[in-house]
Length: 498
Image 1 (tube, rainbow, N blue to C red):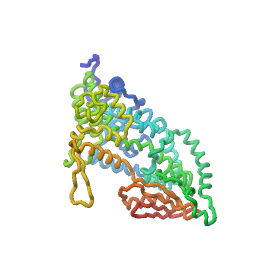
Image 2: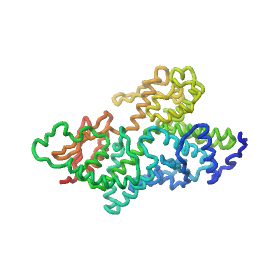
Image 3: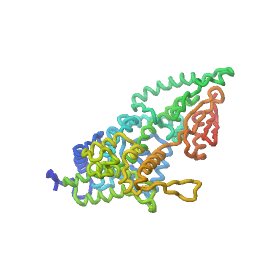
Image 4: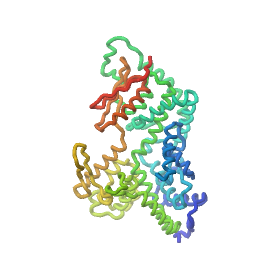
């Protein structure tokens, strides 16, 4: 039985709160002693399927400001769930301190044990230690800030009306992916500071805008010198620029833009680390479940149930399978983390050619370094090995719109490994990015139109772009021009200020 003389955590599959607490304690011991994980304190909550659907609708956050789009998403997913068209996650986890993990009440005790290892220790450790999350999110302040945002927007609905508030949030949501800072570290979140700084911002913006938009007569003003160009440098964060500089936007609308922007910034790292985050959590739960079995804390039946769930999660259909829908981030991330350990413990000559750390028995050090210092694109560039490429049957495909046939440009062989690694990293980066559209100029002395420019060469859906520009024009209060390279699109403001 157990190598320390301990009894099994459970012998039947019904969960109880006492069993969950005991399992969490044992899992925590293994996470600390065998994996050296550093985590936030854990807060576990068991929720129903209906509550899980609520969490889905609000992107997994424990509280959110009210908006019709969340209700729409809830209705769609409820219908799909009840018709059997979709299942629900076994868990959801929040990047906060304490780290909140939601467990489904429908789970068996084996599944509760698995998701505690996966979420409460795997994701938790990733949130706390990954450099991208450390720099770009504030686990200490997010819960208070969510409460502040929800309260403030509810107050605005009471004062200005639901329709007026919804119109602002609609516009902010349309700009969400172009409303984050990618090169500047955001401020820490604090409800108390936000209340104080909100009043300070109102005074500052009023004075600031008076200076920016003062009317300067004379023809010489219309032909401002280059150094007087506004803004002096292109601005990538559209929501921030509008929030700070829209000539006639009411203060409460600016505050709503700020709330939406801050939450979008908090969620930004999750889209940049999906493969790593899920792969590391799978690596952690795989190690812990096997350690529990080796210690005699769970039986063979529990381990078999775990295998059934684990293999389903990391299953990667081949490209010609009817089930194929792209590369499974769980499968890719788990395979790479497992391979890092293998390269340390049992390297081949090929591994020694590719990786300087091959053969280093301290595999935990390299697992932790990989988990801390990378995001998905760089993680793949650094650690995707020939073995994993072979195991996943990777190949590169060229899709030329002008050609009648697809062309395979690389396969998993000696000539293709480097190209495959680079091509997959580029694909991951492209999937995680939005169109690079920046503010390049404002016609301050003329019609005050806002000039946007598309900075990348990726195709643009013109119908969607036009809808988004209409939202921008409503916020800006004047016309908006978008230079998309081959076409210039203009959105007319319905009403302009004085």
